[in-house]
Amino acid sequence: LSLSLSLSLSLQGYYCEEGTTTGKETPCPPGTYNDRLGGSSPQSCKLCSGGFACPDEATITPDAECGAGYWCLQGSNTTTPELGYTLYDVCDANVTSNMDIIAGICPKGHFCKKGTVSPVPCLAGTYNGQVKQETCPVCPSGYYCPEGTSDYLGNVCPKGHYCPSGTKESRQRPCPPGTVNDAEGQKEDTNCTDCDSAL
Image (tube, rainbow, N blue to C red; front, side, top):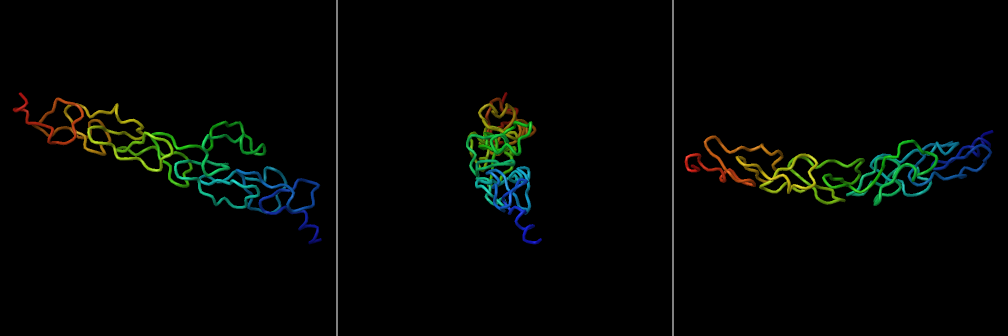
């Protein structure tokens, strides 16, 4: 009895549909894994966990982290998904009606460290004008960078304000009381002059 039972159970990373007797009948395809014994259908193969990739057949446990500069929501079959793809590209066993991209290159205005599940917007005070980046540079002086900024050139510091590097909002740093400036793109409080001298 124990012998026939062991033959009918599929190994981890595989599944055995009804009528099979070997434990390695069908491997789970790339983009999926199976960490349990006894898988009996393609649905026994689970989508690879978020932040990881399952590039090989018969994966038991996702252990390949999504590469820096990329993101892997779930079901990724590569650590560096250059083109982005949907669940339809993973396996017919896990097709859903959702055609959203499940992995891809980190877009502008975001950063993706190793193991990223979905792109993270650049924090306010930083920006990113390139794809595939794992960090966001500090916003340069004379400009301001709200969250998710990809191009700071349109965010010139307004008149009456000054914007040192890392400024988050347009009116974050007004000129001190009794001072003024009439030019855009000012970087330091020293660019604000006494109101009397400005007359």
